[in-house]
Image (cartoon, rainbow, N blue to C red; front, top):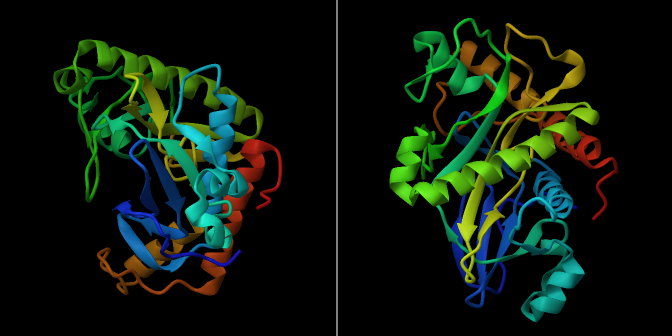
Length: 304
């Protein structure tokens, strides 16, 4: 499969994110098309990562199938032939959508990132190290970087169009979406994470933290949407090298992050767009990491 930077399908495009293009399919469905674009440190690279879009789509599809009895979700199909039967306008675009596309129920999206933190890392660790808090709320004293949080913390954030999302309190979520909806979002997010963390650990991956999105469908149900426990929406660590008291290597983007950090330390990049050109070896190593994440999570090789 050739790497894809952008898609051009004969459907109304209603959104384009850092890696995903969104198309309308009538009034009640959408087609999510995940490209091979990649970002790091909030900068989108000029180069693409072969197979990355298919990995993200098919890991999500695998999780949605596993979660059928846990939460309702938006996926109708991630199989190209089934999608074409549902959307005949795509019959001449099979190669473009194969592996990358997911046909989904359309929802009204809640403006909340439902983050579950099973371990303290990233922005949460920075705030805790400085103030002993997360989103301004006190956490237990004596935690070290990458420590397991028991129980896991529901750490919601606002959805930012650009830059970083902002951590907010559960009380603020209740102000935004209402008390009952906030409780439902937390309950559903915790249930999905608890299932996913257990399954992934058995396969050699720690899901340190992850973010979920939810929407309300036309029948009024709150359902799980977007991507689920992928290397892009989650912090994946390898069980066999995990050690508390220090940062953990990223399972997926580490070759890319390492290269960019080297360029920054050498003064060849200031951290802003555009990013420096990526060597072919970095692109290849990053692609292999994504494919390995798929293999570990699902237990099979990715076939499109």
